[in-house]
Image 1 (cartoon, one colour):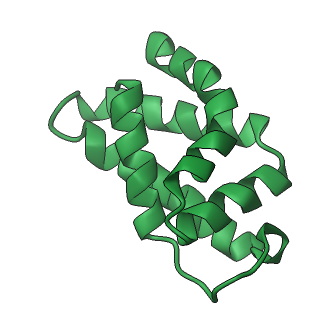
Image 2 (cartoon, rainbow, N blue to C red; image 1 turned 90 degrees about the vertical axis):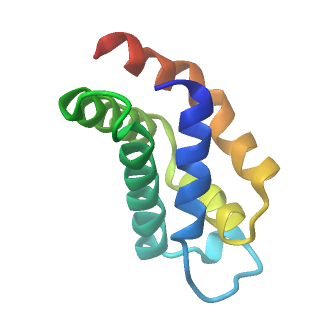
Amino acid sequence: MSCRLLSVAIALAAVGCVGTPHHDPAEITSVEVSVYKAGIDKGCRDAGRGRDPESKTDAFCSCVLATLNSRLSQEEWQRATFYAQQRRDKEEKGVLAPHMPAVESCRRSV
């Protein structure tokens, strides 16, 4: 899966994020972060469906989430979730961008 497809998957994750309107990323709950992460996983799998064998898509998407989980702090997850909920794509991508080279390694490992 390319970075472009991953971007689509992340954008789809934003659609799944619901919650009370917040004024600060620190107000984002762990439940909201979990919903955001589940949305990334679902978006990734949906983007790979029909394009790659299911086993390859599963391995890639599992790697993506494991990589992001190992690299993002709780505060970064809260900021990404906050921006996704507010449809502030540029800011959301800004939180995730430093970690995209590591995510790209998932493509080479599956």
